[in-house]
Length: 495
Ligand code: NAD
Image 1 (cartoon, helix red, strand yellow):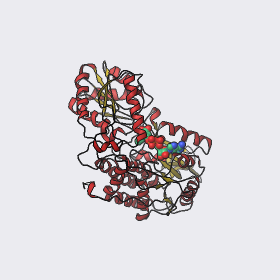
Image 2: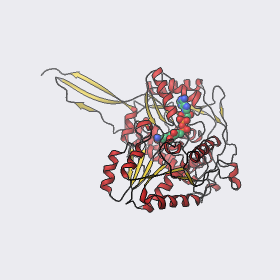
Image 3: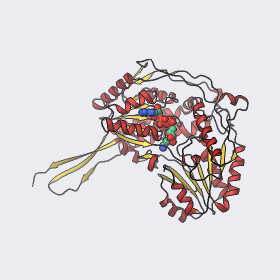
Image 4: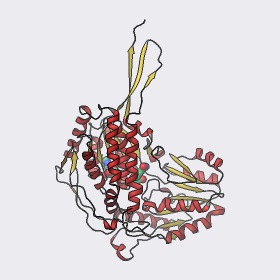
């Protein structure tokens, strides 16, 4: 991996991508952004307004209704998508540098946790372009009845700031593979890599209007997309609050379809017979990886009473030694939080934990050592003796704050694990794998990891239950989000 300090960032042109053309925002909107690690101003990005949304939806609509993309040979569509995947993979360090400067995650995390997996997701989706099959239905009577699977239409992909490249790819990969056209709206705080992805799509020859990129605020840009009658489906990753607005927008307009990947309060359950060294390592990186700004962060660790003291002390000690700092320094282990505002939210949660009687075992304050005073750095924080009812036990903090909870036994661990409104990921640490499988059935979560945590693969579906969302990203199941079924009946002549 190149030392990013020797690289020069290549920022995208400050334009929207609409119908294959690079255009300035019609109402002149601008996003003013700063590097979260240094406070230094980054190049302004354009902010789409309602007129831009109108134009982008029209372009995507035309490309879908009359353009070549949904009509072309599926293998050829797959090849074009594969070209996009390869181009992104080749330029992963270039993208990762921009991502790191914009998001505050380390360059290493940006390469290996965001951009490279994003390219892999596009490559995986490309393979599926000519492999989603229809079916022939054995109906009663003299009919030939078959089902074809057709693209849903114009997709608005609305994504957050924590994994800007890979989450965009989670949506546009299967959407483009199935023949949909897309308006991609990145988060207003991380617009650049989506804009670069739009430039790449033009370079590799994806037809005009198939991928439109509209950086902009949730309101007006996101809201206008969600309310637009020309959008057939919204593919969303973000917070529960925004998801509720999208549901209302859909209900109030054209009942557009929604897939929702939302937040979590994912528990890691440590049984008495766990491999404690492996479990501690996973619990540690499960919350401090990518500075805890991860939907499936293992933000609660539930440890059975007999193992609790030693296990939690080990985590706290390690947190005190974590190297927090310059995201571009290869020695750094944790970068800067996305914004000063988000840092304040996290500090508010830390204060609530202290006020509600949890024991602060590590961290708990801003990290203002040396040049870090200019950025949004936080000390990795570990709370012990966290109990149900505390805000830090139940609400998504989305930062490097670990809540350790003592449970009497595994039965209590399962009860506590299930006692939040979320249900994204859960992990179980036990040497008794059969028991692990039995417990997995009792856990209300979209993903259960046994003796591992936060493992992802393009072939494995990912998503949540309860308020963690609807539908699944990744895997061939993700294609279902972007496909409709059409049943065709033909009456056959009686021979
Ligand atoms: P957010 O909901 O504030 O924003 C997400 C996107 O929605 C952004 O592009 C934003 O501009 C847009 N948006 C905001 N208001 C809108 C509106 N009224 N109409 C349409 N679009 C609107 O979320 P965030 O703060 O960017 O991201 C953090 C959240 O995302 C956390 O809750 C996290 O858990 C979740 N997340 C989930 C997953 C997953 O796969 N389950 C992955 C990453 C992040």
